[in-house]
Length: 422
Image (tube, rainbow, N blue to C red; front, side):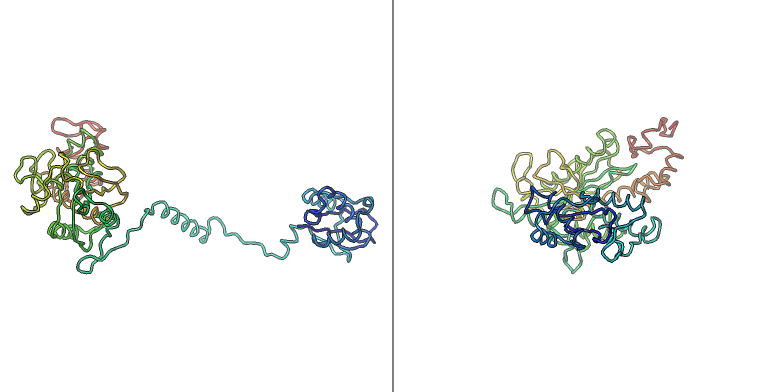
């Protein structure tokens, strides 16, 4: 934008003139300097002010190219002219004025003159603190927000349960080799973080929607989890299995590999249920059993015969698809699978598997509490609470404690499993 501010012809003292003619002189790119000088001289001789590119263009057409400007006229760029004008005013005490003798402010000062000064809140004021908190919450929620929001679904009986978004998509787009619809199972675990007890992985196929099924960690009432567990395992057409991986195995292969192994074993047991009474399988999880084993839900003979094709032989496994909670799929899965981050709060099948795994482990820990009452395992389920750690310092570690978990891995025990040093 262009503007020309000049003093009237009546003023005999040298005048600093700032000419802005970018727009007005675009038609004459090779003669900008001459046009600027001519307009400055025209302004001084006529006592007029050129305030816009249109005025500048009109003046050029009217007066043409004038002689060089009188002594004292200085043409410069916007920034250098403003600085020189301020220096001149500060040293001589003179200010630029219009024809009536009124002082004329610079371009930036004119813009600020009619605008009230913004009042910024103090850094530690209540408004500033509240604003920072809102921004922090918005940023954290944006980072943790899942890619797809889980929309609650109305289950049997009118209650709300998790949706079957991915499961429905797989069923509609994927078919097995014989043309039948894909059977989708959910896979989840419970007990990765505790200091004592096994890690339990469960897989489940639940055809009917059950109200209240969601992530087991969000169901704070133990009675509510038990009630949902009974509804899940008793629903028509359900298939489920839970793999128990004990503490010595966790110490041997680490908790991650133990969890992945349990997920694979549970998925295999759902696809090919073991014969009842097999030594390495069980119907009910029990603290009396040692080592790793799998428990399976009861199914009828007809259903069992229909699904008991061994996935290791490549017969029947293409009918199944596993949705695994987490960010990785266990190796050597008996069927195709995919991992879903926070899947236990997004997919119904994974939520049902999480409830089965959680209730199965809680029941085991209550049984272990009867065998090792000094640790109160039924109260904290093996998690490293303050009461649990105090009991470990007093009584040492039990056979179901994980010795590779801190702080136990930094401790030395005697033959009676009591702490010698830490």
